[in-house]
Length: 231
Ligand SMILES: Nc1ncnc2c1ncn2[C@@H]1O[C@H](COP(=O)(O)OP(=O)(O)OP(=O)(O)O)[C@@H](O)[C@H]1O
Ligand SMILES: [Mg+2]
Image (tube, rainbow, N blue to C red; front, side, top):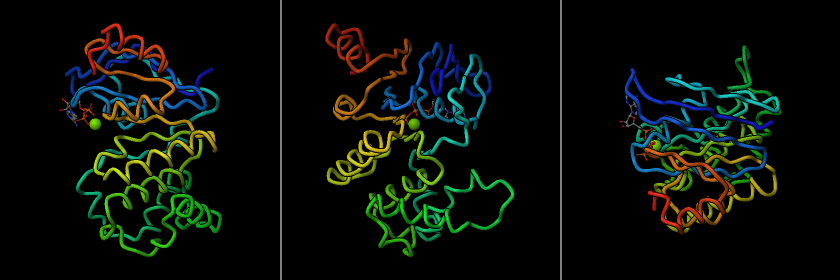
């Protein structure tokens, strides 16, 4: 059984259809990249899987004991996030909230987990810094460390490198790849960077008028035969 299976999903807002006939599955250890034009519905799809909104039609099935609270989420960058007036540690710790239920303080274990994740991402020295004074790359690492506090099973990353310089982009891809290969974390990443998609992905979901899903090899074959309208 797969971790997540989406069957005949139709997505949209107040009756307005954004994307339909979306079928794919995510298995443990996969590195799935979601591609598609601006406005095609990639972020909407992720929000729907996270339960932040309902699908207009279709089904999302979680398997292997996965529940929504096991999904770590790095959302698409917004200006509100950029100016968040909290310390790096506070932001990373808030990743533990999804598992805290009725508790109002962080446990010793959670504080250690937050510190371990800051170290893993090479920003432990920034733990006391104010988030809004960090560079874009440092902010993305902080938000990834936060997502890692909610899970090591599966991460959803919505355009994690969109505002990063080439060096920080390379670092971010390397970190995510290591999480996938070394820690066995399943990755679902929205990306416009086809070169990197082809370098790292095991599977590709292309959201368009005729959405397609398959392995990287299948995607490349389709591209070669001109059967894919997304670059
Ligand atoms: N809260 C909302 N209410 C109504 N329509 C919305 C809402 N959020 C997004 N949309 C619309 O849904 C469509 C898909 O948006 P979405 O953000 O999912 O696209 P995307 O594929 O992630 O695009 P991008 O590559 O630019 O991030 C767009 O036409 C957008 O205007
Ligand atoms: Mg988006």
